[in-house]
Length: 301
Ligand code: NAI
Image 1 (tube, rainbow, N blue to C red):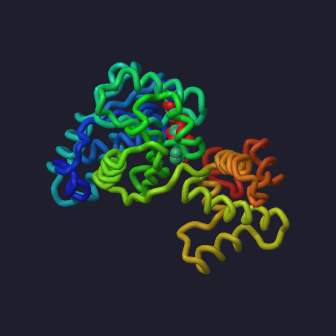
Image 2: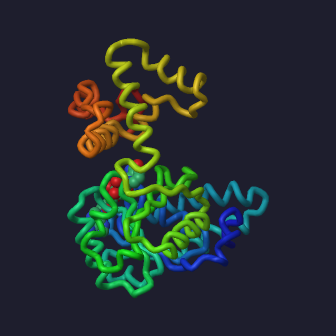
């Protein structure tokens, strides 16, 4: 059983085998949506405990998806989970993942390890294989500067949590071919996402626009212009956002917010991205949001 929601364009798609390198938060989500769409997936991570964790979390999530899709048919439910799980292999060796139509990288957010990985993938993967990075802050062109297949390379920027968030940003590298672009867009659709396109520019579309918005929300709270609750209620009821900016920051992690603002400031020099003392202090104190039990708000552990 291939998830109906995702199957409409699967037959047109050139991508049948996908490898995800990095099986953490993002990588496991990307692997899940590809397996749900009927593709064979290999997850590669340096750490075998992470791979085990990824498999468990994918299995749980698939169960949830199956219960929604096949409410009245427990046998289909089971079949869906079993089949999707069977399509996922894991390995700690990159060599086990190179035989793929598409390889998506979701490892640590550092330029050098990413460059090293792509150079290696470029050497090992078959000619037709498309390589993509899920980076949110590093230049796609810089990541791929050492590879030969620059026409078959670009960015596929997913959002957390991957199985839930419907957007995929397809980032055009300078030398990406039209064919690669078309294949990436089609693949995005096949895994249930709405795709938008962006040049290789700092923050792409969403983070570039979210940055000033959340920075101003932090500053407003820091100055005491309004309470945290009122800032969040204001944007939910006045602008129709599903979450307020401070709630959202706690959800994504204040460390991630700080990091994104730093990168945007460094790359654009736009003063709206300047460091925010309150945010720096909270990160220093380990108040990172939901994941540590306290951020702008307090959470029950
Ligand atoms: P994570 O820390 O949960 O997972 C990264 C995984 O990569 C770890 O399991 C680690 O063992 C593995 N790894 C590190 N170096 C490796 C290598 N050389 N080969 C194989 N595996 C390796 O990180 P997360 O949050 O999943 O982020 C991954 C990427 O996705 C980063 O580039 C990040 O910027 C990007 N991203 C993150 C988002 C988020 O909300 N967390 C949103 C969109 C993109």
